[in-house]
Amino acid sequence: MTPAIVRTIQRADPRDIARLGAFGVATVHEAQDRTGLLLPSIRPVYPAARTAGSAVTVLCGAGDNLMLHAALAVVQPGDVLVVATASESTHGMFGELLAESCRALEVAGLVIDAGVRDTAEITALAFPVWSKAVSAQGTTKTFAGSVNLPIVCAGAAVSPGDVVVGDADGVVIVPRASAAEVAAAADRRIEKEARTRERLKAGELGLDIYGLRDVLAARGVTWRD
Image (tube, rainbow, N blue to C red; front, side, top):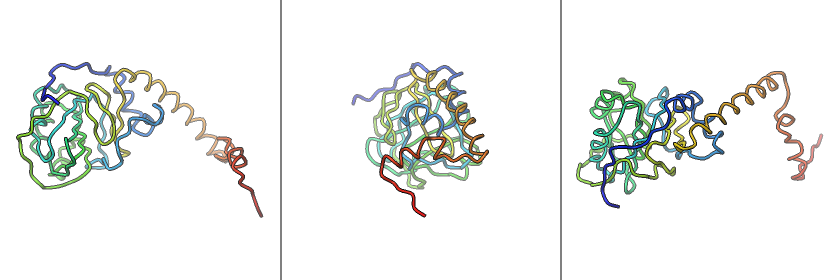
């Protein structure tokens, strides 16, 4: 990999970002055929954290946050920083001071496949952060990585400009080119779930609504008194 910082990227339509953010992670994940979900080790720093925005991708060295600082030179309001590391790391690569900088630049959130620190201060700032670890372990600033090139973060491929949706359920990535299509599919899913909810509230069983009695029979399951 040649170290590089790409200044200009295409971003998703803000209307599609807003729609996907309103649906939330679980619905969006289901609407795009259960793809794009980051590993469940990526958790919000505080339960109420919620975000949706275009990805600015960052590749850092393990225990090194140089490229995170560099990324802040190219972000636009509403972007979400998505950070991967060149090798496994749980160092506290993001803390209060970077959160203050992100707030000033109107960054919408951070997703990092490593550690963060100063979680009480980040929570007080109400800056949305998802990470796989909390650690006070400090970092260096020497690794030449990349900004706005494709990365793999917590098991998911992320390209610059993809839509990032985060909430209490985790984080899901929607490719920029399919954002409108996934939002439409999520709309349909919400409508279908509303109908199903009413049937369940009326006392119907999921076994009957979803046709699962036939599935049980096909697998040789018998009913006994």
